[in-house]
Every structure is written in C-alpha cells, then in structure tokens.
Length: 546
Picture 1: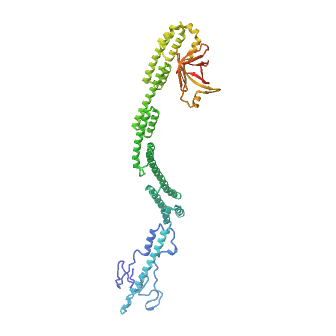
Picture 2: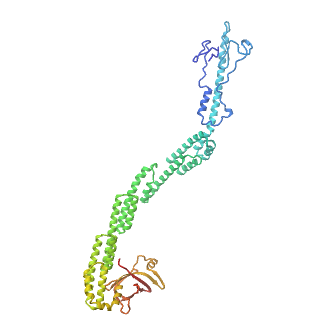
Picture 3: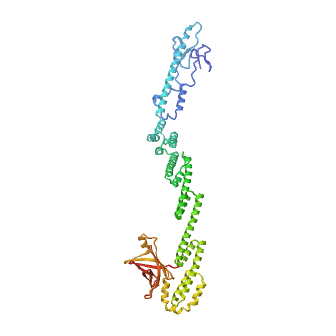
C-alpha cells in the first residue's frame, strides 16, 4: 500500500504517511464485492435463475485508472516520468518538490482526493442498492417463495403447477420443496388435532398434496387424522348411547376412543361407568325373567353380557344360579306332569315321561325316586285290578290283559305278577282260546295314540301340516286308552274322559263313552285307529315304548 499524496510505501496499520503526513485512507474489508458475495450466498435458495442483465453486480476487482502520459510541467512522454507515482485509486501524485518549491501546491491535493473518495462511496452505495433491489425481486418472485405463498394460501392447484415446473426431478430443488410441503403436512395435521380445521377440510388438503407429492408422510398423516376423526365420532356416539341407556353400545363406542384423542381420559372414565350400569341392568332384568320362569331368556341375556364383560364374576355367578334354577324348574315340571298322569291312573305315561327325562338328566335323585315310587304304585294298583278280574270266569281275559300290560309297562322283573300269571294261565286257557280274538283286539287298543293324518272331504294331509296351517302348532291331538277300561281324549284343546269297551258286533271296533255321548273308533289290520269327528276323519298311530 502507498501514500495517495506522495507515493511513499506505507505499513499495513499506518494512519498517516511518515513522509508527508497525509492521512491514510483504509478501504473496509467488507468491500462492495465481498458484501455482494455474502448476500448472494445467503440468498442462494431464492436466486435459482440468472439475474437479469440490468442487475449485474459490481466487479470484484474494480478497474484502476491507468497512468497519465506526460511528465511534470507539461513534458510529454510515452511512459511515466521519474519522480511521478500513482496511488491505489488510480490518481497521480508527485514526489516532494525540490527545495525552493512553493508550499501551496501541496495544500490542494487532499481536497482532490476527498472528492474522489466521495465519488467511490456514492458508487458503492448505488451498487449495494442495485444488488438489494435484485435480491428483493427474487425473494418476492422466486419459485421457492411462490411455493411457500401457495402453501400458505392453501392454493394447491398453483402449488402443484409450481412443483411440477420448478422442482420435480431436480434433486436439490426437490429437497427444498420437500421441506416446504412436509411443514405444510404437519401444520394441517396440527390444525385438525387442535380442532381449528374440520376433518373434511384437512383430508381434502392432504389429498391435494398427495396428488402431486408422493411422500409417505402424507399417507401417514391421512391415516392419523382418519383414526382421530373415527375416535371423536365414537365418543359422540357413545354419549348418545348413554342417554338412551344403551349401555352395551356405549361400551363398544367408548372402547374405540384412541389415546391420541384429547378425550381419551374422559372416555376411559365413562367406559367404566357404562360397564357398571350395563351389568346392573342385566342382573336386574335377568332376575325378573327368572321370577317369571322364563329361564331361557334370562340365561341368554347373561351369556350375551359375558361376551361384552368377559370374565365378570357377578355375571358368571348369576349365570350359574340361573342354570341351576332352570334345571330345577324343568325337573319340577316333569314331576308335576308325571303326578298328573298317575292321578288319572295313567302310570304308563308317568313312567315313560320319567324314563325319558332321566336320560337327559342321568343320576338326578328326584327323578329316580319318583320313577321308583310310581313303579311301586303301579304294581300295587295292577295286582289289585288283576285280582278283581280273576274273581269271575268272565274276566279271565281282562286279568290276562291287565297283567301282561303291567309287565310291559313296568319294564323289569316283578316275580309276584309273573307268579300269578303262571298259576292262573292253565285255568284260563280255554276261556282265553274262546275269546282270543277279542283279547287281541282289546290288547291292541290299550296305549297312547297320536293323530298322524287328517282327512277333510277328499283331501288328506299330515297332522303337522293341518296344525301349522290352522296356526295351532302347540296343540295336541291325542287319545290315551288305559287297560283299566278308561280313556282320556285331547283333540285341538278339547279334552274329555270316560270308559271304553270292545264292540261285540264287529271285530276291531270300540265304543268310547263320555256321559251320555258315545264315539265309535276302529282299528284296522295295519294297527291304525280311525275316528270321525264332525265330518273330519282322524287317523291315529300308537306310540311304542322306548
């Protein structure tokens, strides 16, 4: 560096020239070219395209003014003359004058340099303003800024156009776009979480972004807001169920609220309330059903509740209680029915019912005791009737029928009855042969008969179809003929009982007597019993013992 006044070589930190005392001008380190570089570097992301020709920056090394031709006092020459030097700004300076020179010459030189300095400063300011204007232009109008503005305005059509034109397929620029769009995705998701944006709007925004930016984060955000929206919907539906006392529905919906939902803690508390109310409701309603002996409904209700409140101890205990009550009720119903049969002298039906029920409930003490009790009563009853029949030769056939029927019904070893039969069989052999046909007819009539076909006019149909079409599915059509000479009839809800006897005029024909009314029935060779009531022909088949 040299003095701008006398050309003396200066040290780096000199502030005045040691030769002439002229102040030394220090050019700032952050010169215009360096400042330009820094600005351009900071705005690199925005200055993607070339700066227009009118915005060219100041050259890094300013052109220095060349030396003037000619020597001092107007001497001409091709190169610099001895004694002349040039400062770093391109100005000419002269060596100190010889003795006798005029001192006034040197007083005007600093004013000339100050003038040059102001020109340089003004030029630098103008260049800086020009660069700033160019930078500001590109900050406002550059693709990155435009993309940011489109995202901020939620103008996805414009954002897509900018992305496809300026960013897609360009690695560095795609990274810039990814940052902008990624921030937008997070912002949309946050707006939905904070409930400043509704679900449909947030979903529409994310779908718009996914239409031109293929990134996993968009799909993840879509799934996240969908789950949260479903959770919020479930909470609202659960509250509606609670108001309607649909506690089972409330339990299901409260269980669908996710941890990311701001109402998760409230939903958890409400879930426990719903469970408690649901259990109380089931316990109370099932008990009411049980008191009406509707155990099937009560048990089904508790089993359904256990699917929802799996492992609940109170419900499990209630189920066991109901099942035990159902079994006791069913068995008691059977015992009551058997007692009804026995009270009418129909031990056959009573014993048959008890045997079948024991097959379904093996080892049940009540059923076993009742079965043995009725067998004993039947034996006593049948022996008494047989003894009465044996008192007259006219009743030999009846005695044999009674005893044979008893052995068949009791289904076991009864030595007393068998002994009576063996002792008397030879005595009655002749009478039995004489009346064998009638005996067979009487024996074939005893038993339980069920209607199998119904004939009206010329149309014959199964009894089941007849009852179904008539809306009487649970109605019985049954005839019970006892070996005691009595019968019981139950046809379409109309019941009656009386006595029966074989018709001596016609084989296979019997007369049922109820008070003053009589009803003939016939048994054909196939063993089917026929009865005509009010123009309707009923055909029966006899039950066979299991």
